[in-house]
Amino acid sequence: MRKRWPRSCFFIATLGILIFVTSNDSNGEGGVNHYQKNLRYLSWGGFQRNIRPHGETVENTKIYLEIPDLKWRVEQMKLWKSAIKEAVTILPPKFVKKLGRLRFTFYVDRYTWETAHPSGNTVYVNLLPSVKRPEWMTWEPWPSDGFTREEMIFIALHEMAHIYSIGEELDQLYYYQYSGMAWWNDSHLEAISSIHCSSFYPSLDDDVRVISGHVYYGGQSFDVGKAVDHCHVHDFGVHDYENSFPFGGWPTLYGHVRGRNEDFADTFALYVMFPEYLEKNFPFRRDIIKSILAREYVTRYPMSGSIPSHLSRTIKDTDKVSGGDK
Ligand SMILES: [Zn+2]
Image (cartoon, rainbow, N blue to C red):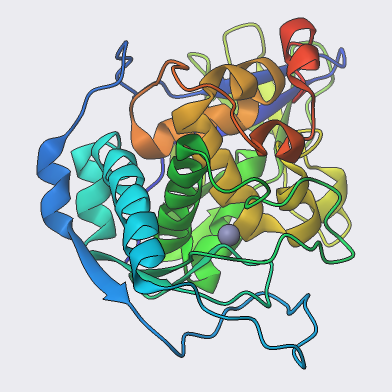
């Protein structure tokens, strides 16, 4: 499915000041509404055996680890289902409709660290992952001391974000979109890396004229402000890929270590549950998720269990730091 994205651009003034311009098409809503009708997209696959995790094995497979009995599994599934329902009913109906059918199925694999993974529109939730960490995991594993309700909601949101972003093209899109300068033009993705604007530099041949505070490029209009009279559009080059990243860091350690898909999924869950953390540290990313969900949230969940240890900045930093994206 191709999507048209709200335009946004990153505009680098010649004075060295970074100004982020984005179209504001989101509806700010206070509070968290429960959209019960979203539940019609949700179904359960029950408990299944023989589900293979995507994550690595961290336990010695020569040692037999028993699967807990039915009573324990039913109880765990009840807790997960309640949390998953909450995750589904706090998302905007439009977004859930876009995801389409959602199915959550449960299994137990005690040999892996993996908590959940999606496959198509089905999410497989591992009721009892190992608490052993793989080498790259420097934070507390989710199941340390069992799962808190907030952890379950976070994981459910994370997996739904994966369902949204599955597909290589979309992964590419996030890559560009995180830089703020990509859009779908009918059937293909167009991207620029930055727009350098100036009011006093001599105009170059390939400069783009500013008309009423807007630059027109690639059939799109970018709001660059009225203080400039010409801009230079800088296309992506191979060397720009890492250098032009404007967001300065990753909201979670997992996203940092495991790449863009995980980064996106974690950022998505943070946006819904802990918007203040993004607001204060990663406003650029906050804006991207805002453009996808077209609504805002207020922080109303406690950061329980392992959640704080997953963050790349401490909550204490969050109190002090602002504009970490810049
Ligand atoms: Zn993930």
